[in-house]
Image 1 (spheres, helix red, strand yellow):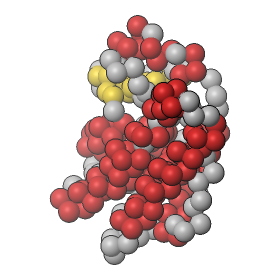
Image 2 (cartoon, one colour; image 1 turned 90 degrees about the vertical axis):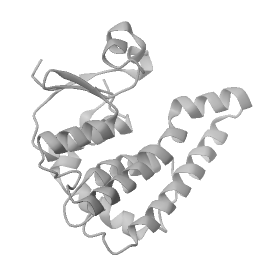
Image 3 (cartoon, helix red, strand yellow; image 1 turned 45 degrees about the vertical axis):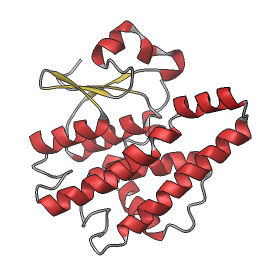
Image 4 (spheres, helix red, strand yellow; image 1 turned 30 degrees about the vertical axis):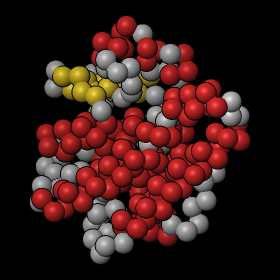
Length: 213
């Protein structure tokens, strides 16, 4: 393995964020697939890397880092000179606000572990799962669209270069498309995602490009 190893799952939103960031910063890494469907994330080996049993985990600089946003901030500070998270306080706060709106408000309640448990305790089926995803992802993205409407949005979520916020937005849109969420009323998001997806750093991090383990 290389000096930088990413333990991830191809469809994991959090892993997808880190793949984008590594690509944007030109950091070569070795991908180590952790197959969630086979419960590899719950093995002793992976629990040693991440005691929560989640992905991703990033091995870098002799450390094992977890939590995707913390990883992105570390990469921005150690490799990116503030490229992903601006150093100016107002810009940094806005990028964190946008990132947290997805990673802390939309993603957790739409995690498949959460939704599967809800289905188990309510007896809901596939349609209930779809309705849940469409409701919470759609409502969350509508709020994100409003957050973008404050004059500081440029080609990307904040200004004219990708930041941590874009690393969070694009994987969430991948999930939205997967769950057939209506995105027609989100013009700013659509424009930003189109700009992101045109960049090789985003395209090569896409789950379809990475492929299932």
